[in-house]
Image (cartoon, rainbow, N blue to C red):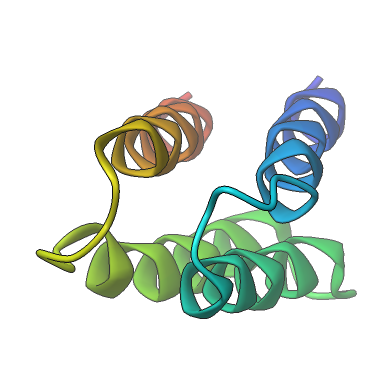
Length: 84
């Protein structure tokens, strides 16, 4: 169940990475977070690493609002998985 939800979040990340309207630096951080989720660590460790990567970029004042919303959606989904 957890792995399926992680795959869904990776799908959201893929969409964001492929979106050319999202600044390159933000796509890079999302890609790093996706790499954490795909690692061979235990699920809680992978999720925590991904969240840690994304929290910093979510506070970027230059991020377009639509990208910020996408990052918040991803963070919310990861936090939800972490608490289950």
